[in-house]
Length: 170
Image (cartoon, rainbow, N blue to C red; front, side):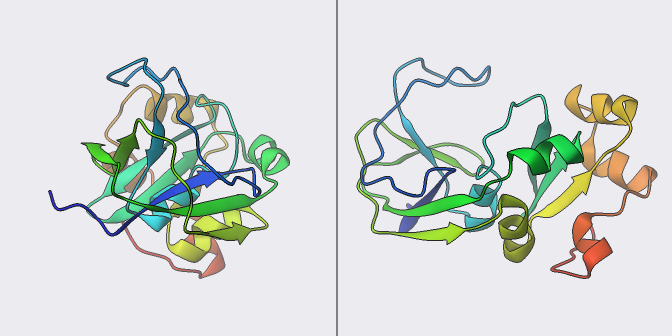
């Protein structure tokens, strides 16, 4: 896999000068050593602007189309205060899987893109956002159901489709 020119890292904090490696317990991580996480995909990065519990969202990508499924719209919007996507040099980053890359070294941003809203940033960059108001349906997504098949079978409209903004049918 060729190394991308830049890596993006999203944070609700708009004033980071250096991104320091941190330990973040995620069940799929390969290490408990501190790392800086990032992605070569701007749209994928915007999914991480809102600091929320992993139980509230599930996301991924179909081919190159990023999506985020949100299980509680009101709670998510209450936590959405915007943030910044930092543009990082890729030199110290290594691929992990899919759109995820990591660095074990501190990284100084080259620049940043500030967004007043994580939701609006996702819609602007083409992330297909799905608000699921039925807890039983959302539980199927969290349990690992085939997301694409479930979206299609249930005819779930994305927020993009509702607004007519960067809608990409899945």
